[in-house]
Length: 263
Image (cartoon, rainbow, N blue to C red; front, side, top):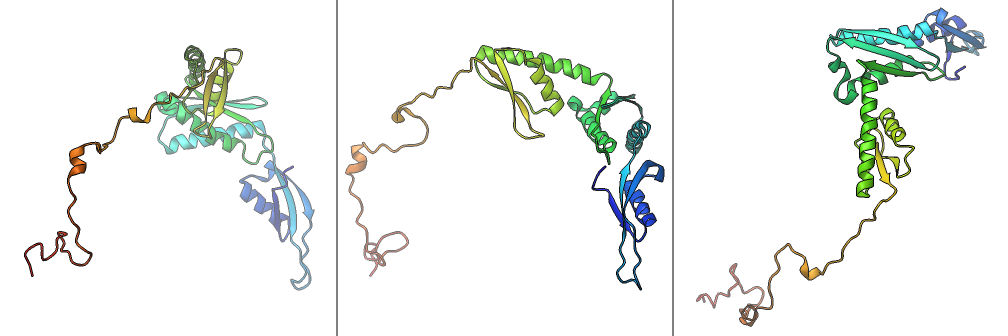
């Protein structure tokens, strides 16, 4: 039983009603334990509130209905017509969507589908002690994407070995990264690692024949770029420098009044 769902009130009934409102549940959907009976005290002095611990009971049917109702309500708000089919086993809730425009529900590389899956997962696991995985599919996209990623993993692994260098893939969600890792996990010529932080976490394929990068030392005089004055020119160094006037006796042009013919 969760230790977080503790509610208090002047009476046990008041505490229970407060719990039902906050959990958005009916009395039949919860069970509770009385921790402390309320005491009114004398003239309002020395009274103690009643405390109860509440556990939300969710049957499989309630869970399926909750997720289905959420998605249908969301699609109605977005003016999207879609059928929602929900199946459940011991560990997973599988939701299949179907509409006249499935591409709209899937999004670019499944981004919309992933977002819907995250929201549905949060709704399904609200006030639950044990986590239940939610998987949303549409038009067999998950299976197609899995095959695409497996083929990509093999192709890039071969490329990494041929070139002897690491290859970084684009950022992927945890589900897709697992597919990449698994697709080439039995190969001895490569290994995979995940780097970065979500949502920009990505897979790196590292070949066993990884070549160390070599840096060549070059003569500084051979480097190009930037203007360098040639001070070796004798004509530039042989010309006499103009005589500078003392500070305070010069005009803005740097010449004295006397040199300009002024008294």
